[in-house]
Image (cartoon, rainbow, N blue to C red; front, side):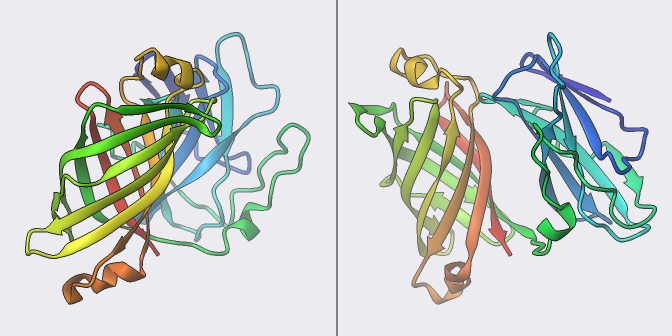
Length: 281
């Protein structure tokens, strides 16, 4: 099976059930910033992801190969999966692909142990997966920000402030607006990674106020620092964050006990950050 998007190509064998060697994914063109995750769910419930590691000596002139080994799974379980490659703000398959095009039945036990990477023994996947978790979707956010306020280059990196212009969120348990009084006080490192420092106020449709704060990373690409100074941005850079929500409203105090995680992308032309927020349980 093959996907193409934004100059990236991702290929994998969807017909052959993964054995002890795991799921092999090929990406073109090769790039040290390529990151491959295999998203999967078991018996139609939940969704999680495991990182695929680059196979030793797998680089060719124009491609590289990755391998992901799933943890122990119940015999007979139906596993559906989708490999995804992210590279400097680009992604293949595109975000519009949200289903799981490949599946297999687990014949027995764990598929196996991952191969060593660059001569270093890989961790035992079975022992590394002792603490399973679920991710409950809370809401999808759409936040518009103003043109960046560039503070300048400092000893810590390039300081950039993104002030909230407007926003909204809607999901199974949360619905409302993002008030135009927060910001992201970002620091862009020389390697092109933006470190987020966000504070914002959410107002639910029924009048509750919720304080939101989160850190995370914003992928601008390997040359993102200099490109940002020159006003050049990737079209849709990705962001991964860890939100926390605090409120005094008794209807939403359940939020106070959550550690959340969020994933999304930024439309740099419209300055629109769209992301899904999940309760990490």
